[in-house]
Length: 221
Image: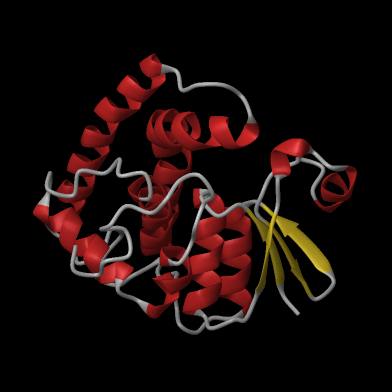
């Protein structure tokens, strides 16, 4: 039995969920209120963060490490190229979204609008929301620039880089914070990845107090 301790709108958890689903690995999803820092959860991951994957009696943390472990242990379908330079590009783009995009956009929009309310931390900081709303335009333009010469973000085949980006953008799309009309290439890319069977569980997520927007699960948005 594979078990994933997660929070539905965590982009890091979503990246792992996409990887598991793409590799057709059955997993039990256990929603974790990680911010409560329960002793039992801290025993699973002293860092107090999700995702945490339990597999073969082993507990794993950190989304990129988990995804690369799954790729090496279950190489089909392939989500990391074999060429060292191509692997570097995948890791670079994963880091772009998990570090830069997360810091400038996800933490300023998703965390302010959703996480604060769920965690009982008060109201959104309007300065943070305004900053994130401005910075997401830069990131969408960068993605569009990449997609001018590539079929997918890191090259001509889908990789973990696409899952990292889609994990963040799908979380923000749940609260209608992505302008899909800004760049046609980005919208087409997201439509392709959104239509994959591995994306279905993400599209079924329901967050109490935050109903899905009408377009969220629409494959022809």
